[in-house]
Length: 103
Image 1 (cartoon, rainbow, N blue to C red):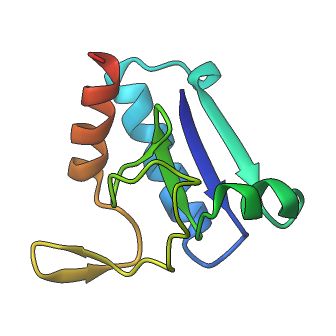
Image 2 (image 1 turned 90 degrees about the vertical axis):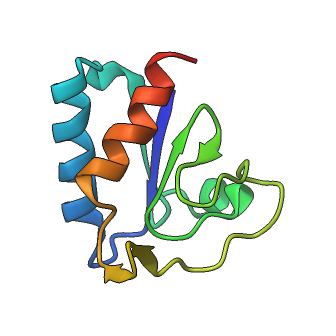
C-alpha cells in the first residue's frame, strides 16, 4: 500500500503528480495508492502524526524511514544531494517505490 498524506499545502500538487508518474512508469496501479487530505480528515492526519505531504510505503515514510504513528514527524524540508527541494525528486521516488514492488 502506498499512502499520500497532505493538507493542501503548496507542495501537494507537484508531489502527487510526480508520485503518480513514477507509479505509472513502474507499472504500479493507482488502486495501490491511498490519498488522505488532512484538511478533510483532520482526525486521521493527527492520528498518523504526519506532515504535509508524506508518502508512506507499507506504513513507512519514504524520507524518514519512520513508521507513521510511532512519533510525531516534524515538517520536512527535503534535502537531496545537499540541495533543498520543494518536492521529493523523481529518482528518489523510483528507488522507494521499487523497494515496494519487491517487499
